[in-house]
Amino acid sequence: MTKILLQGGNVLDPAYGILLRGHHVLVEGERITAISPDPIDAPDAQRFDVIGKTIMPGLIDCHVHVLASLANLGANALQPGSLTSIRALPIVEAMLNRGFTTVRDAGGADWGLAQAIAIGLVPGPRIFPSGKALSQTGGHGDFRPRSDVLEPCSCAFRAGAIARVADGVDAVRLAAREELQKGATQIKIMASGGVASPTDPIGNTQYSEDEIRAIVAEAEAAQTYVMAHAYTGRAISRAVRCGVRTIEHGNLVDAAAAQIMREHGAFVVPTLVTYDALARDGARLGLPADSVAKIESVRQAGRDSLKIYAEHGVPMGFGSDLLGEMHESQSEEFLIRAEILGNLETIRSATSIAAAILQREGELGTVRVGARADLIVVNGNPLDDIGLLTGQGEHLALVMQSGYVHRSSL
Image (tube, rainbow, N blue to C red; front, side, top):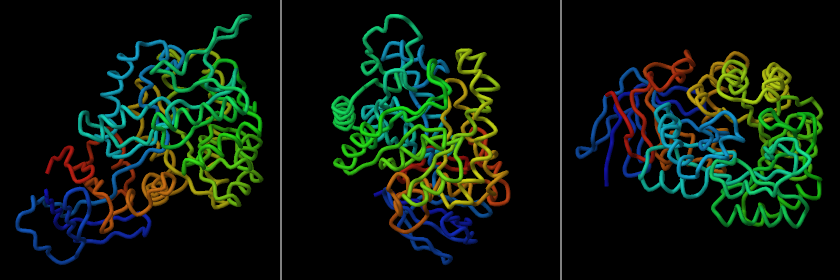
């Protein structure tokens, strides 16, 4: 069994919010087996001197689309499946280089890609895939343009499509079961209009309550949960009342909806960086004009929403939701949040809170004995300077995933 000893670093477990100075961390195989201020006797371990650096959990992004190599999701779905998959490889490797050792894919990635990473065939973060998100006809996952003739929707069979169209209680039950059978670890639904889709205003609610409850029932039967794309207070409230566990985006939340989320134990995953990136680069990278026009209606509201969620005690996970070349902006989400929530709470969103969203508390997002050895070593203290977690990983001295050193400058 491979042993690795990180010597003399400052250990940050975000859940506790304190820095343990001058500690040693021993990794054996895929797990952390010892953390101590005293020297650890491990003569056969590979040793790394990390004095003055911060040892912290690998980062978790709870809302990515790793197969979205193009900003125009309709065009992305038209690519050959093999091209879609190959274009995803540099996207996932870059995420790992930035210190994201785990991601939850919110539509597109499947069990096959997750397995390719899990068995070491390609480098990338551990993926919790949603398979294809479920969308009603004309909903946020329906990228067919307006027309007097709607062709049969074959999006479920295209690797580059983030969603599939299903309507009616029986149809959505079957769709949920099919995604679970294919390896989805949770089910994603579109419960309101969105920015990237062509024909659905953001204020629309999507799926009937009967349909949402049916999808939730199927997820719960499979011992998992439903995550829902939703923007407005109205869409958020009805989704949560129907049993949805995590709200994605949630920019236009109001106090009443936030209170309902708190009462039901729901999480939110804001994705603020994507609106900055879309406003800056979306049109140039092929985002349709109708989508560009929607951006400003939610951009500032997203920042304002953080205060509403914080005031009502709704736990916030980290999400980026970037597309195409904009994936490189993933870590800029830290800067946006830290301005409003502070460094520690921002780091928690990508570690301990994210692990709770994934139902992996104590295993991911933590530096504790028995936890999975997903670790990053930061050149400095991110509690003082959140910018150390930004960029393309240039401030990271080491990235470790399940005890394997992916890269190191030590």
